Image 1 (cartoon, rainbow, N blue to C red):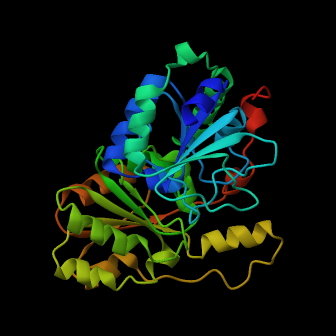
Image 2 (image 1 turned 90 degrees about the vertical axis):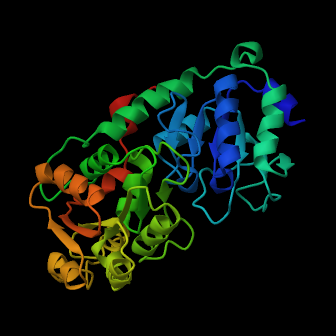
Image 3 (image 1 turned 30 degrees about the vertical axis):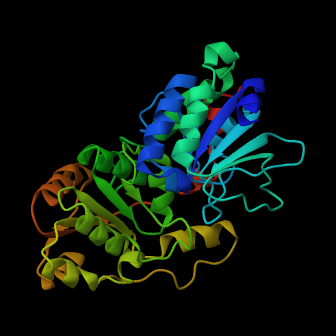
Length: 361
């Protein structure tokens, strides 16, 4: 039935979620996309399941609506939702009489007013994709039309590049994302704490392999970045591991630097420092609340990590950050990078100017 529905569609699309983040599923999905030519979107926890340099990658649904990826999803008349998990920020909302959905996962769908798939394929996801791949037609055979989706992709990619070369100081988030991507190899791992930078990285950072972007997209608990980097190093001691934290999230459990030093770990911690609870300030400003009680002073982070026996680096210009990242990622030990950040344009995430790129999409 799923194959029949796919062959009857005019413009299907894949959405890869948390449940697709398995080695065999990654392999099968890549083969499926290569055979069919069907474009794909990821959720935050699905990043890297298929190499995001792939020409059919439409972007990450870091937001639930209003982004370029949602224009691509709107262009579809059938969604293959792979590994949907309700702990995630929803990548789309279903409407009665709207686009139909095939739910492919280990577990049956948790139906609610905004998610009620018409078809379910339940079982091992990798095997299900393999079975579908063996029976599905190619794009040419099925007559699918992805013209609008590919137009959206062009404008999405242009939007992602905006600000990536802006070397202002304090550092611009889009530029930091680019420098981090440039500094890490394909299997390098970033471990994100929770703050507005998590959205910038989910949208703008291209993951090349599965499980190379570790983030908490469920409870979104502050303080997750450093311990997840430590765990990543324990599992993959030969990989380059970078925790990316806000100053607020880092101070939730910064004492774990002592554990990392004592256990002779090789990790780096990039603190994006704005001397405030930046994401809460941003959200409250957009809700019309006064900015009160969310700014504070921080310790000298370089001296702080040195007190534990680690190595500190202070970023004093955007031009200096690439060299500091390279040193911290290639030199043994626990490194901490104090990087002032400029969040002045955070509202670009909520107010993406799609018309600026093309009124036709």
